[in-house]
Length: 467
Ligand code: GDP
Ligand code: GDP
Image 1 (cartoon, protein in one colour):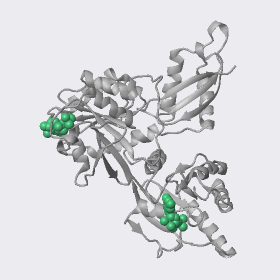
Image 2 (cartoon, protein in one colour):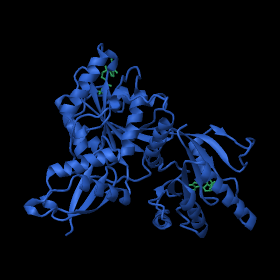
Image 3 (cartoon, protein in one colour):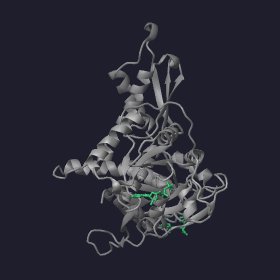
Image 4 (tube, helix red, strand yellow):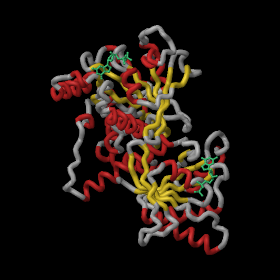
């Protein structure tokens, strides 16, 4: 159990609905535990590969009279003190009410980490409430629809780095625990990411994954294995490609949609002809994906075609995970793993830090690791760094290594902010941006990657003129 999350907010915003969604049937009522009020419910939550304790404060239905409001306040304070992270929920349809301000005040004073969530935001109805939510001074609100399960990939993306932080802290406090790094977690190669376009996705869509790779790499076998029994074929999708098929699945509460580029089609008998897909199909899939899984065949890894599509995914600003399939057929696994990592670093330096996972689509081996790698890649891709942290960082970076001074006139980096996530995009306001050389840009990009823990995701760093 890596951390605890308290869901707080005024009655009727949807706290219990979210609690139930996270906990499912794994509910542990804490009524009869000494010292814990019967108004707090606790459960074991699952979200993707995250496991945590969730605390619900929804015990008091209507805080109408004075004493009830007081109890509500006490209850919230207790939950806030108990929990590592607080999810403060407002109703996006109702907007920010005076009662919300009371909770915001408690949280600003007491909570260690606050995630602001605007619930009931399905459809368009929550738009104005979302904007109002900024006024609470608790950062950007997360759009949620607890009832419809929308926004769960974003919730995961916010929680995942915090979970890692808590895990690291727990490991540091208990030095006897051995933290074992997998081979795939090691950094791979050197690189730089500059230029490219990104696309904002809407929160109500599942996490979009494309599995790409050469014919016979095992794409359809992989997707079918991931689907298991719960297969749910969804038809040709408007706006994608007439032949493209996606399947939607649920990875412990995180809805994901996998685009297949050819394989499933034959299994689904949507089309009898066993045609093999063109590279163009793969390219289209990349455009619609958030995370691209490049599936390689261990007997012929890193073919020209694989390299092209991996590079394209990076240039398009997608999160990339490399999976090496048919690992069951490999006899010399440890040497091969080493060789693959070296090749990866050499041939795809632009994907520095991206995960490489060995899998077998036939046996199902390591598919859990692949799912985890996909969720992590997506979380990193979604990461937002606050402006104050960025500017502290920029100050330290320029002090450690001042920008160049072409013609004796030092370039001044004044201010920095993250303008977008998915992938992370930053703008630095500076004097004479045209004169800033690539090696200094690389220094900053690599520093961002290291210091804010964003391996394997394209990072865009732009420089704007401000004298
Ligand atoms: P709590 O008092 O904060 O625990 O709120 P509940 O979870 O009991 O939800 C209050 C009401 O809001 C219920 O009628 C829910 O069905 C409804 N609700 C919860 N989440 C959503 C949502 O995402 N969208 C909409 N439209 N209604 C929701
Ligand atoms: P696609 O063209 O990429 O969709 O590839 P398929 O899923 O159709 O697989 C091509 C061939 O590789 C089939 O004969 C599969 O049975 C085989 N295959 C797929 N995954 C594995 C694996 O993990 N191990 C082994 N040994 N064979 C596999």
